[in-house]
Image 1 (tube, rainbow over the protein chains, first blue to last red):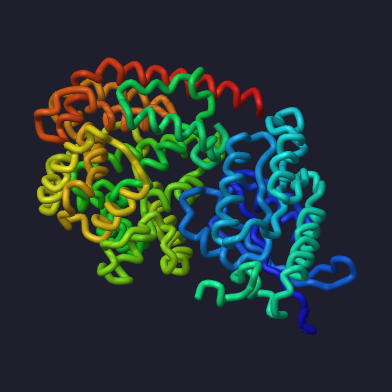
Image 2 (cartoon, chains in turn cyan, blue):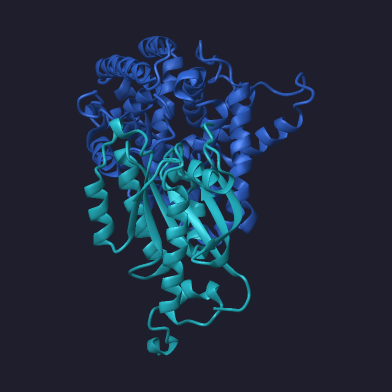
Length: 197
Length: 337
């Protein structure tokens, strides 16, 4: 790692209305937004300490609507870690998040990448339609971490983001790529560009 | 329904419904039992609009709207939204009118569905105005032939964030100005703008192909490119297959305004009662309706005539269904709340 400040770009993705902004704002500003304004794209910065090490997080809160797909590849290319958010009470969003997962891997052109699957709205337990087991199984199959959260009750909010940071660190260490962390995304795990020749 | 048009439906169910529409849209039944999740239906509508070969809000209209927005301080100078739309070819104009009516209606229930005009504009901005269109104009039309119109094209990404916001503002403005849909916008047909004739022509050919309606994204991509920049571009018919689909929608309405459409008009006024889905339904029905028969008229017309003749009943039925559906959903919501 560089001697400079550690810095990660996290991207929060997921279908419309699942609570991406609520999670993000709860994490950044510690309050629950009850507005219902669809996000186009917002970015935040937060410095936090994970495992005793200070990190600067650039967090991109994205649009859930499929219509904004044009912006997606853009942020997917630059993101170093993804929070895939769905709502536990919305099956559509659960399917949507699986598409996001595929798309991230495709854009990154790799089989795994730092991703945390987040089932939000855990406070609406009585409306839950996605069981913890199902989501966990999907996560395990894909080698990603799964957490349930409630932006409203501030349950597992910080934990989700911080878990993602840990996963990114581990991932980037394993990559054994040059210190410039921002490069990692583009390199294949082999890392040898000569293969193609 | 909270989040109407914001939430996403299940992709699998959407696909299924979409396939059904493509097979035989007049047979599609959006009953509560079959499609209990309204978000599936709204999703399909958005997909449909988004994948039209050219955005519903053409770059010309977009420009006109932007211009109008700058006049806002002196409203007396600003044109009415209906006039603004007059720069659209009739099918587009009719479809957009219908859609704006519908969205206004939805917005008028924002206290229960939380979808204000602004929210709807955010959700529909990118549907009605594709970034490609802007990228097109600025990036030079030379790339027209290439694929990638779905917005997944790379270079468009950067500019698109800004575009999106402008698009949303424009749509929001339109929605704000749009009269509450208590009546059909009159006179749509009369002021046929010059370009419309050409365009209509252009669209009629392709419609024939509608007989095999489909939305494979790849093709749509191409067609969008083809028509995206300048509606007047006469793209080769095969590419334009979508245009047909859509002009149909428009046509339907158009004819409604003309002579034979009392029924449709009627159902629309029913819609004013606040039915969320009704109008969309109508678009769909008419859009697909043609598939069944009457193919020997104008290509286009076969669809809408079809809608007027063969599909009248089902159209009515749909309206009723949707009404019921919506009412049911509304009830549920109240309970939830």
